[in-house]
Each structure stands twice: as C-alpha cells, then as structure tokens.
Length: 182
Image (tube, rainbow, N blue to C red; front, side, top):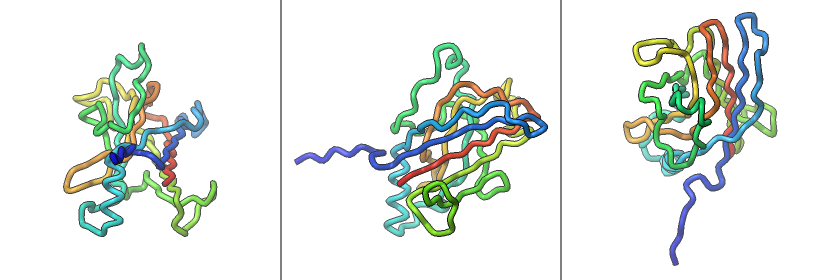
C-alpha cells in the first residue's frame, strides 16, 4: 500500500491586514483570508516533537517582500504548500522576539496562557518598516509574506501568502494578524 501525504493536511492558516494612517485611523481592513501552510512547517513540528535540536527557535520572524510588480496587472499567484521561500530575495524580516511581534495561544477567539491548538501572531509594521525604499526596493510595495523558522541552520517558511499590493507609506502602520490552527 502506498501512503501519499499532503504536506499541509490538517493544518490551517488565516490572516488579516489592517492599514492605519499616521493618526491611527483605519484606512482599510481587508478582512480574514486563508494562507498556505507550507511543507517545511511539518518538518519543524516533527523536530519539536522528536526533541531533536533541529530548530533553535520556533517562529523566528515574519518576512515581508515586494513580490513581483507584474502581479499588480495579472493578480498575485495563489500561495501553495510547495513554496519554500519568498519571491523577493531581499525580503525584510520582522524579528521575534521584538516589540512589533506578539504570539499568543487562542481558546476560540480569546487569548489564553494555556497552550491550545491555535496560535495568534500579531506583527505591527510601524512607520518606516520595512525600511524601504532602499538599494533593492524602489518603493514600499508589499505583495507577499511568510512566517520564518530555523531548521538545521537554515531559514524555512512555515506559511506563505501572496496578496494585492499594499503601498505602505513611511508614516502608516500595517497590522498583520495571523492564525495558525493545528
């Protein structure tokens, strides 16, 4: 008998983006959308469960990237569990731990200190974050993101999202909330 495994079966991810202006007023709220849990997420989880020193940190950070400008005309490609890296090779990583990064357990929709099968990750990209434009980015256009962990000394993705362009000006704040359900 052949056993075929779906690399993200049983795992689920969702995200919500809210953009605020310099005064803290909501410019838009895109609502909840699904994200793709990628294959390396299972390898990271297996390392934790086996108690092997394959990982040095759970979630290392949130990588945000410019994706491709061509996505603006054709729409972004759907994220898939096969994704292994952001398209943007010079993505900015918001570090965990850090003041802009929070991880909590959720019981239903309520934050709890007791471990559950649901994590909420909130990342706040405040003014001048990411620090673009720079030598690799002519604008602060964001089109992709993914949670990053470290596995066997290499950064790997846990989830991946492509989305419509977010033109984040230097004074605005993007609040990204991610739910992972195991």
